Image (cartoon, rainbow, N blue to C red; front, top):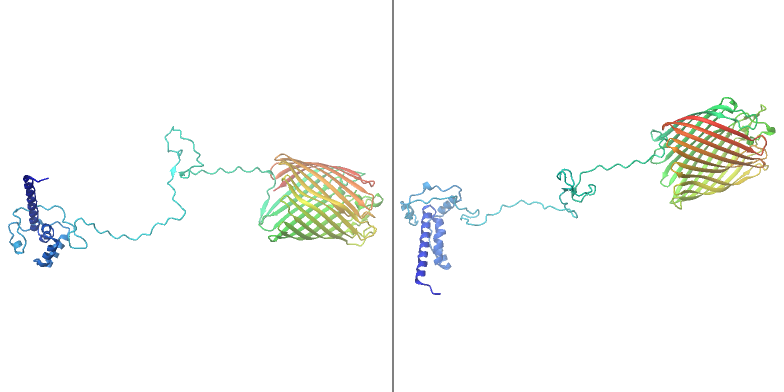
Length: 585
């Protein structure tokens, strides 16, 4: 498109006006005392537009510098200050002789001073030249260790209150129900105290708790009874009944050790008959058992026993000839000691123990006034017992038990001229069982044999049955069955001894936590080897215990006994009534 002459004229006029404005600005900066800066910026910028780069390099090399180097440095130092320029110290526009003498360009014809606003332009920190628009150098930052996040752990989100928290919703609102005990993973819950478990009921709330003495727990008791006995001496004729008083004291102990064990049961009492003083008798029994844990699977067992009782005057075991009866109660004192070791081999248990027992008999007074020296029958019993058991299941453990002993009498012959020392062996096979935790106990069958030194006395042998079973019918009803077989000694002429078998059944019912009724039925059979005498004994007892508190117990019982024998003048019947008070701790 052709350019018209009128448009070409406008372009020329606009360019001339721009050049005048640039020249006027250069004059003003020259008057403000910065000719060096002007020569390096505005004037140089205009000349550079008309010259080529090669010409500009030649002029910069050939043109001498009229201003000394110190002047340029002084101007740069003034520009680096932060104070505003002093306009009053400037030279007036008319006095330009000094500027011309220095080779500066002519002053601007405009005489008035142009006002200066703001601070002078910034100066670079690394050079003496004005920095227009360049970025300021950044300050060096101190080195900081990076934050290391633990492996496998992620930060949890912030906690928030659950929707039904108190004081978070306006009154009257009905928010949806939410279980505060099972909130979401990012919900803050007010801690709630856990509800304590309900205590388990005590099945024996009136049982003695005992007294802790050091590391032993002792349970002492004292009991006093009074009642009436229709036949204190168990006679078949000339029976005389009598009221009586019975006093008894006992103590049980249990160790509280983490290793080893010690248990003890001691009891002693005395019967005092008002109408039949000859029937007065003491009684005592005790057992002390200890276990020493040598190793985890090795134990040493120690047992000490003692027993004090009296012989029954009307029993044919005393073998009083010509129907002469004993009028007193001869004492029988027994004490013994056993020591053994038990070794566990996984489920197999093997034990071996040795035992010693001493039997002492008191002399008896006969109805005709003579003394029967029963002390001639004192003897010692030495025995060795081995036992092996294997746990098939936690509820069934069969075992094998073998016992060998020797009974050695102090005197060569007894009062009737028989030598009663003997050797015996007893074997039995049994099992310890637990059926559904309702039926627990031990049952065994075996055979016992005893050979006497005197050839006139036959060997005594018999099969044996021993059992001790406890059946818990209900938590308040318990049945206990006990059976035993043992070979008894006797002084009956030409009789080596008696095979005694007994069975007992006890049924206990707790009508209330503080009231318990129990009944016991007992049957015993004695068969003498070498003599045709057979004895049968029946007994039935009904007992009630009422606990006034854990420490005071009222007791009452009724007992009926009947003894039958093939020998004449030995049968008897006895009824015993008792009411007592027991103090326990």
